[in-house]
Image (cartoon, rainbow, N blue to C red; front, top):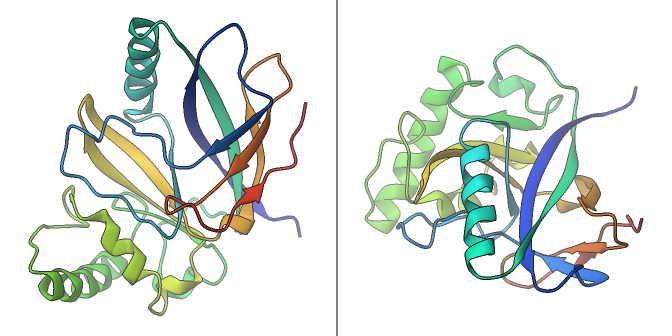
Length: 208
């Protein structure tokens, strides 16, 4: 059976008439530089879905033009196993390796996740109400995905409060599951993905 995939979106700025033929991408800023939100470092974070992502992209286009630059959108996908429209359960992580919180998580998952999250918060002297509310401490996902059963997940989606409003993002921790990364341009561009710390460079074979 073919694996299901989720859609991913990101972007980069460039000068001149066309982007460079080779682009290396990690996390875009997503207007988080004006906030105290920290993103995970063990995975690559993208925009996910439509809630808030259009606002981020619209503002990114406007900002690029104010800098006399252009914005290039990048679309990609990530394999997640079997997709289910039902809310995710703890026992389902092995079949569907994608968790979107809080909307696609059962009460069981949210309760379990909250308990694990509180332990991580206490270890670092932090406070928030994730997954029930936004959190500024999303770097803690790096530690969560080392633990069972969350270590089975390819990607976790969650809302963040950006400098231009709420947006849904997704961090892909298993970067080998990312495929079809393509720059939305008529020019030939090869997109290469890298983790935020610059490690584990990976080329998405999508020259076009």
